[in-house]
Image (cartoon, rainbow over all chains, first blue to last red; front, side, top):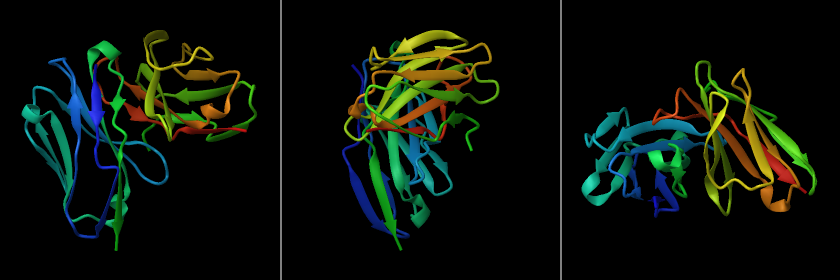
Length: 115
Length: 113
């Protein structure tokens, strides 16, 4: 069975604070992909990053960074110097071949950034 | 803009009715996925089509069906609608049927009264 847990339901921060969104996954497959998507208030799902199970290099894209640790089955997402426009629901997702590569989403973390 | 289009944007209907949701994938993408987002179930995978063939099934009810046409657009048919079917329905597309990134459409918000 595969599962994605985003234990933080809601996070509220003040602008310019750094914030980390946690994602813990479970799978018995050795080959899998992990994803992060953003859902702003407008409702669409926006792709942020994809990472395969053999690539544990951390990635940085502007104010966004991702920390993938297979030892703890975690794929955490950090926003540095948060901005109001970062307010959204963020979803972590897992994809394995047995499920046709469909995305298995966590429940999401709602991030509110206030001025 | 992801390049994936979905129509209609909003749909209001009554219990027992049937509706059809339409999705056009990004140019060049052969795979279409359907997902349902509801408050109690979260984001759930329903079904996947690749180049006209059904490839994978998730938590799709028997009252729901889908197909992908030769021009690669896809339709999700929901019948005998119940109040609990009210949700946001997303279509996503990807190039193939592997671990390529899935790009999501804007969704169709269905309200069953």
